[in-house]
Image (tube, rainbow, N blue to C red; front, side, top):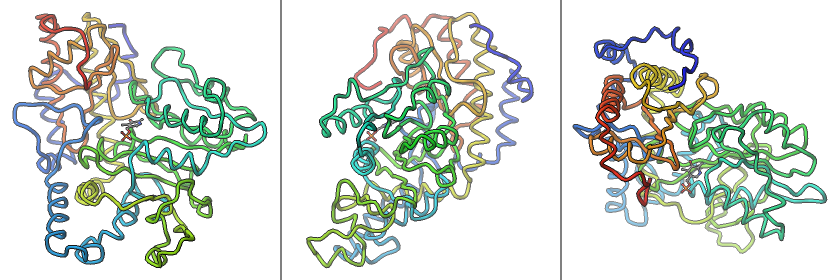
Length: 436
Ligand SMILES: *Cc1c(COP(=O)(O)O)cnc(C)c1O
């Protein structure tokens, strides 16, 4: 591997021994949370950035919702510890501290993609010369599809109206290129907080304030930062944001997502109206005139998916106890330790660390690049190490603050070293599976 500023790790005084990893686990103020998760014996799970592990508290709150259904039937909407009628707003309030929002600026609803559709329908207003949208060429495809479809709904050609910021190195986008893309023709800018492949963390505050100077609306996809990194969406003046809850927030496959709308936009009419966006006092008047809730809750459409939302009740409790500041501190430290081990133990095997190395510029996972990445992942999986593969050449490794130990990171790197030394990966095809 090319030498990548080893000095960045010097100040953390890491060393290469297993006993050192053990000592880090003993000092880890978050280590007690590990017991709350179903961590499978004999496996090291490093894919919490795709699907977080199940916790006992998430399980308990899901079972509790089922119990309420058995117990109350229709009255579950207003009875029990967590009446369903108010749950989306209540969980939004509880999630607000994770994104630096005021309580009623967040609501738990929809999915990442459907929330983006709602927010585009609400905020994308092409007018005169100001018709274009800025995105980036490294963004997650679903976000791009949503942007393209809204341009088409307005009769505009995505080829000429979706301005995708180019990446110079195929991994990251530069602040300069983001700023450079902003012109008077741009109506809206939608970027990820953290890029899903390389893990680059963008300067949300600077991007937002510059875009506002030029009169744009600014939205962020926070899928890869929610639950891993603190945000200040309200004070940074971000117009809207959206994210899922099944990655770092550990709420289960297909769990209900969430969105943020800055309070200055509370008077906006939701682009896609539905009765669950109603002012709660009015909803059951069953009038044909829609009166939206005067807060983020107005963005809801239909009946909330209570069973897919309930695990979040238990999961969020842990985030409150752990605090997002301590979660971020451990995440930076443990990913830094992982990079240190990679640099020292995997030299000469053709790896490259693709994420930015500086703390201020990286998210919660390490992006390890290798030409044989697909089959190296298969080989690791066969040995009980669970990474994830992103075509064409990325192995994403996410040690998650609430449940990954330093000892596991140590063992995972040793295992990877063995795979490389014995060329075990050559037993597999270098091709991705249906789900990678
Ligand atoms: C995970 C992820 C999605 C997934 O969208 P869903 O609607 O939840 O399927 C979208 N965008 C980004 C950037 C993601 O990381």
